[in-house]
Length: 288
Image 1 (cartoon, rainbow, N blue to C red):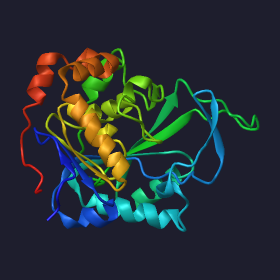
Image 2: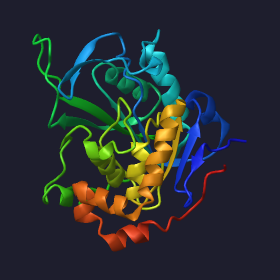
Image 3: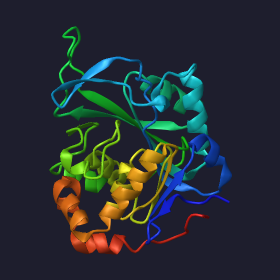
């Protein structure tokens, strides 16, 4: 039987300290949505520019090159497909280093690609070599499990967030700010507003969200802020601990209120009374 590394008191946030390749086949549970930020395999000894300093781009052993990136992506995406409900959707982030492999693997496995979101960073770092255009975007593929099974899309909310106009596939968000690093930082941490928008766009209140490469569990914090439930799988103990600390911090009422003032999508369209209603989760619970 699986034993959670951490589970919040309201059972809405669970972390497994394990490898997703080992653990996903060991339980039977279906999720409404999956977000995955898999390794981009950029840790090759290069350098970058961050916070006014030149830094090494090495993230850790988990981000070092694999022999066959296509086999790697097809394997974890296959395991994740088995964990999606028939009408469920998956979001996968990446750059040109891995996103084409991800798209190919999704198609081969029978997913239907719905959109490719371009995350345009409003504060990208400079290109220190001055030999290329500045790197200022990442991509997020949105796909559903079945080609002919309708998926959920909160069209009206996305339109409202976008000043009454249809939401486009280009989203402008800054990289993570200091207010998101109060417990520490993961080297590939994504901004909360980015995850909140994905979750609000593709799930209903009380939905279950899975992240097989949890990192510091930004997905889980965003899910709980939106009134959704979360399971994260993280094999590095350092980041499983960081996930736990971030969720414990969220139990402080002032922290949740502060986040909602910083995340425009929540502050404008998720009033306090709706948040309280969404906190009354429905449906089945994890089998561990």
